[in-house]
Image (cartoon, rainbow, N blue to C red):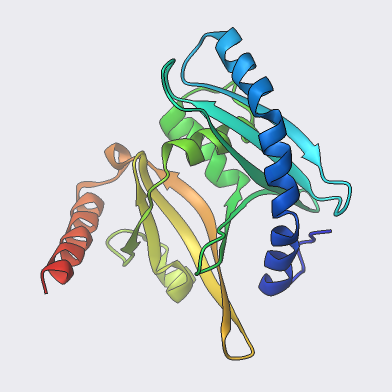
Length: 218
């Protein structure tokens, strides 16, 4: 079972061990979810199923999402992790560069208040809305112009993500095992729409984006 005091390699191995069973369960629920979304008739539409995997006792959310009536239904899964009274949502990559994305309750609350503006949504629904709307994340170097708390967190907060809906502030780190295997972690701490950031913050983000364009030209 996944617990908060695991190291990154243990946590990632625990999550990946459940992957095939979660994919099977997701595929088994696909037709049922599609019928529920179409029956509701409101778009964007989504359904979620809470699921505790018997073999690991890990808690998951299996979700299905359709942006508009003629759109494709996308399905995925998230892990719910409790650390005492604290609750986190986990999404992990299956790519060549493994990483665990951890969403705090504060991040999800701020995304709901500042962007979605739908107070009745549950934390699970907010997580699904964020992940289905913001599939592309552009890393941005963070300095004191973008975050006043950079001095407090230092190198762990030196990068954020520019996404479709705004800007994600995060803490990051990595764990190296046997001098080869690297697992990265991103702890999403808070969210800001670009419209609610200062002119100086937006200018600094724009300048960082221009640096990436210049690098592509070299």
